[in-house]
Amino acid sequence: MLDYTEEDVGNIVSLEHVNIQVPDQAMATLFYVVGLGLTRDPYLNVGLGNMWANVGEQQFHLPTRAAQRISGYLDLVMPDLQALRERLSSVQTSLKDTQFSWAGNDDHVAVTCPWGNRFRCYESGPALGEMAQGLAAVEFTVPEGTAAAIAGFYRNVLEAPADVETYSADAVAHIKIGRNQSLRFRESKESIAPYDGHHIAIYVANFSRPYHFLKSRHLVSEDVRNHQFRFQSIIEPDSGRSVFLLEHEVRSLHHPMFNRHFVNRDPAQSQRNYRRGRDALIPFRA
Ligand SMILES: [Fe+2]
Image 1 (cartoon, rainbow, N blue to C red):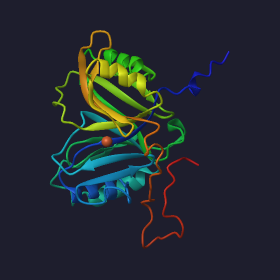
Image 2: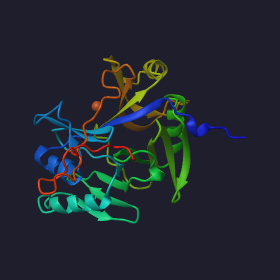
Image 3: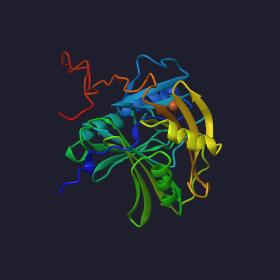
Image 4: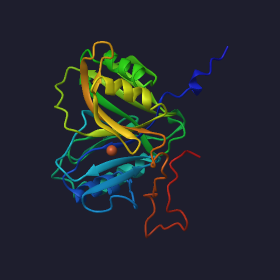
């Protein structure tokens, strides 16, 4: 008998943005907008102090301050990897004195941003569902012996489907988000840089239970305001032992920005090959 569990969605309904500080907006524009082909949010944060870069239904938030770096990978889905390779080549000279680099691999293009954040860009297709452009996953590198506790935290506190799988001999906590996103926490022997304050923003259907669990353990780092709160410590739920630091901006579905429409341009448009009425990119597969 079919159990239809593939139709289920956990309590975290979306991973909406990743916030990473950048020290230079001109360089960030070259990388995120020209190179990756993302779209600057035309409505909010349009000055020099911050940039919001839309990637399908998700965003990068890029405040201007000392560079931050995630200890892992940001997995993007894009409609056309050949076009991506051409855009990355076009910014190569301008970014030559930075950590920017890229390489084509079997099934993805690996890209490092000017400040060392690592992206893996996959081409949209049936295996990746309806997403044609978007942030599919974030993978964090975590210390050995923490994956099971991290999966337990997301399962018991945030009420998201979470399990531990083994990839290439590494234990990986895999957290399902919404219909087609995930967080992964991959154990590694490599040394991990101290947490530098980057954050992720998630929307949760049940807001009060995770809030009260964390509040009662003094783990709420910013209390509820405008339908959101923040916490940083991922703990082993039974012992309370902190196993990993990652700031989460946790929003309820009453937050005014839930399901906000993000403008996405088609970076294939150009003055030379202009196609009337086709400036927008639809971030879903046909
Ligand atoms: Fe945020």
